[in-house]
Length: 306
Image (tube, helix red, strand yellow):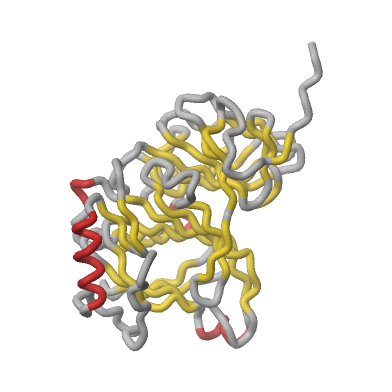
């Protein structure tokens, strides 16, 4: 048997093999006192299944006296999903929700016909400074649910299912995979999982969905002879049998699901028609979205372009 060729570092934006559709790299973006790594959307790939947006917040140390300040802003046609590895964020929205998000929790906000929310560092954490490390994803709602009434659901860490498989611990954050289902209400077939791989693990990625991807949070993983480190997303080819391996251990998040069709994205708005995007822009510009109770003195203006 011939020895296997050495693995090669990932080259962003390239298709690495028959198993990999493309490889994406996080790009720096400021969201209000914090620089994040934005992976989706990108020029190489606009979405993975219904996932149209993927931000990695941190890891960062927020200095004493500072903090995260994402002022009130609107959404339509999507669900935002926030998950932290470290730190805390205070979520407020126009439904009256006021919820601290802590490591391991899932914060699922369905925008539907329209919602406004803010994300900030708690006052006590501003005094001493704090670390922040986490993810925010947007999931496009299927057309029949784009105009659903806005909803907010918070799921504490201990309510999410965990399992061990092939040298890995899997926490299922949303959807269904590996024979388990998360309690989070979803609107289309999808899965979202936090996977901690032990050194030497050979982990199979579920093949239940048409589109799938793995984002490396920490450590290094190898797939189809390609090595990827933190800040890289491996997007898998449809139907391919995928395995992830790591010599020293790694943490990845897996996402995937069935496509929901073409979507237009402008700023914080996602819709299946340009007309709906234009209506949302007018409504925000003219003050027709609801206010956020307890955080109604500031807002983010509609950008000139997005």
